[in-house]
Length: 100
Image (cartoon, rainbow, N blue to C red):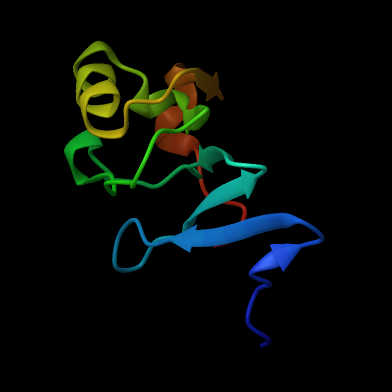
């Protein structure tokens, strides 16, 4: 299997390790703006999230990480300007990564 690309055109891609056997997160950068996208990862706690250098324009996270206690850890650790939540928190146990 080939390595994933590090860039698509002028958009830089960085794959971020989240957990030993989990699909990676994806950091996308374009003209100095960075967005971090996290896939659904079973058992990933907010305090386990990677630290990122600099500020994030946006953070895209699954609903299971958007609980009130996780949200505080996420905001303190990653300091995103915006947070986009996807998925259904009621179905979090059924959520799986499309890469697994």
